[in-house]
Image 1 (cartoon, rainbow, N blue to C red):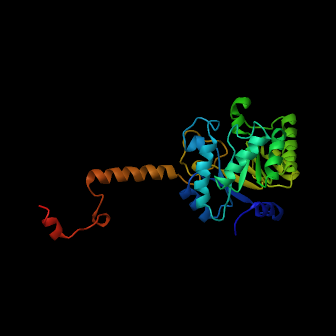
Image 2 (image 1 turned 90 degrees about the horizontal axis):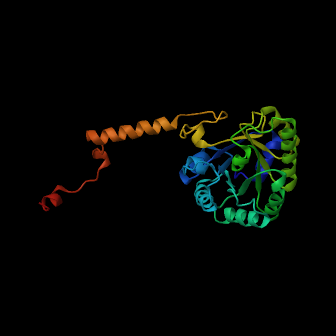
Length: 275
């Protein structure tokens, strides 16, 4: 059955955990979908892990549309959520609705995700009013990294913790059907999860969220520029790729690849006529 806003909301009501991973291309999306992941996030993290940018701020709408469309072609059952890139919604309600519409129409997303709390509730409300599902994003919001002064855990003071809870309630009231909590203390994330009716999806936010999300290159050991504390590596695919490439190179040098089974044949009589 296709995962939708309804099935994701139902998962929280039934106490079933939600599994979300990022993907940025057709082949990966198809693999994740066949494995049964509930949601695929086309994150603006593609700036870091795919495009080699220093941050997510440089990611454009064209980047997101291009990669989201590829993922959508590979996702059958998983719900595809696409990040709204920096300055595609902060400039106002009109821009937010237009750009969210592009991600749905051109990128074939089923929902969009945007960062921020009360300050972006007008945008969330307007996007939802345009029949576009929204996932909110609170805590460490990478597009605001310059304002934060670095990648830091959020909500550690009483005032910051209260604001996080208030923001979660605000984005729910504005119409978001789920909220990502990034780099939030586990006990605070538990309070937030208990304070809202929509699912919380954690990334560095402890085990009590309604679901979890990771960047797939992180959990498979394919991105080694840095490793956040919250990442668990489930396989070292990066090492497997490097070993396979080295073997490939060695076989070329040795002449063992391509072998007969990798080559096409022609009748010797035809070859004889060419000399």
